[in-house]
Image (cartoon, rainbow, N blue to C red):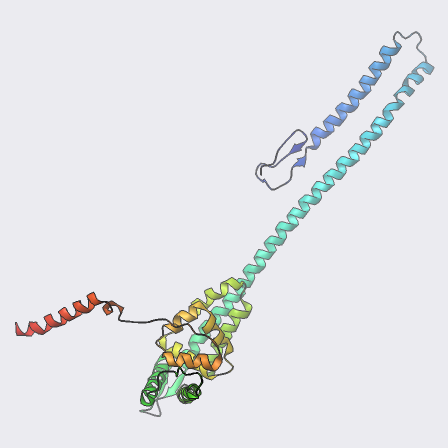
Length: 326
């Protein structure tokens, strides 16, 4: 809303939010004009009423001067009016001071939030760097040569391969659907024993990730920004990291933060649900920890899932067979 300017008020055209201020010069001029006009008007009335003057003497002049005593009340009133003007000016100063204090508080709040964001992001990216370093230092012994160690992603890949082989030997991939039997307990126990023998705990690596998750959940400067940083973190995972972390969350009771994020964060759900973890293992995870995991249909061969492209694939294969005969 635009401020209105007048004879007694003036407004800043560049700042619509500031209150109008008193135009002091115009107020003073009006006050003096009223005083002079009042004196002249009263003197004129007296002279007109007593004209013609028959005698000029000190006593008569004193009487004439005393007749202006009624103006003392007027001047007293004007003095009171001046006091009111002073109070009004002080009130305006207080309003301006309050506005400045409000703007200062808002600026301080913004600076504080910016400082908190900078501190959080510095800690977040420092921990992410430490996480990558610990991942690169993660190692296992080579089965072909005991004196050789395998590091980083390659180590997780070897562990995953061993786990897949152990699962294929057991041929137990589907979680029992009969909730009233002991089969679900037996399946969960088998999966727990198998994964614990292969996916042994890498403390520095997993605890660093746990620290990052705790930082995001507990110290993020804005709650609505938590998912943003969880998405950044989850985008750094390879498929082998996702599977390793899944089974670590399945095995270790202390990783409740990781389990909570896997089950609630859309970014983590997207990565873990499309990581080709067997559905039976996910159901066993849910059964053991009483949480729900999001499962996503993931098919790397979607192009050939339709009838049209299936026919095209057959025709291409047939044409390749005929080419050697031609």
